[in-house]
Length: 250
Figure (cartoon, rainbow, N blue to C red):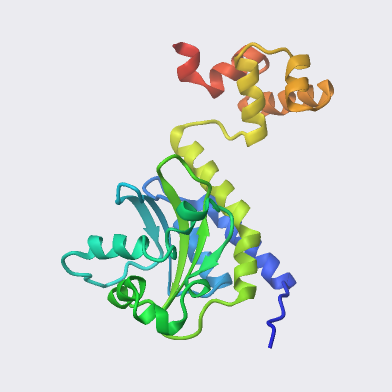
C-alpha cells in the first residue's frame, strides 16, 4: 500500500513554529536547542542532534542535541563510530555521492536484517537506536553539517515525515546561517544583500552591480535603501564599514 503524502494546515503551523524557535538560541549553543525540541513535536523522535564533523580526518567539531543520552559507549567508541560512518555509504552518503540536498534514512540502504549485521547496526545497538533520518546541510570545506533524528524501538520514519523535513530544510539552513552571523557579529542582512554589499565594497557602481546580478538598476538602489535601514546608516561607505569592519580597517 502506497503511503499518501499530505501536508495539513496544522503541519504548516508547526513548521512555522519550528522556524520561529530558531531565534531563541543561547550563545553557548551550536544550533538552536529550542528549535530542535520543537522539531520533535513535528516529526516525533527520541532524540535529534545537530552534528558538525570532519569525516575525512575522523574528527568531531561540535554537536547539539535535545536529550543528553545516559549512554556509556565504552572504550573504542570513536573507532566504531567512524567505521560505521564509512561503511556501505549509509552515513557518508553526501561525501560519496556529492548530494548534500536529499533527506535520507538508514533504511533506504539497509533492511532490518542487513542493519543487524552491519557496523551501523553495531553502533546503533551501543546508543540504543533503531531508526535514523538525516537532513544534510551544504558542504563547508572539510566540515560536514547535518541534522539527525533518531528513534529507538518502534516504527521507522515515514515518507510523509521525510517530506516535512525536505520542506523545512532550506529554512533550517537559513536559521543556522543567521545564527552564525549573529555569533560572528555580522549584521543581520540577507544573503542577497550581503552579496550586493560585497560588490559595493569592491568599488562597483550601481550600474555594474545591476549587470553582474542581472537585475534592474532600480532594484539595486532599493536593496541599498533596505540595507541602510537595517544597518542604521545613510551612505555606501558607512554601510560597508558597518557590515565588514575588519576589512574596512585593514
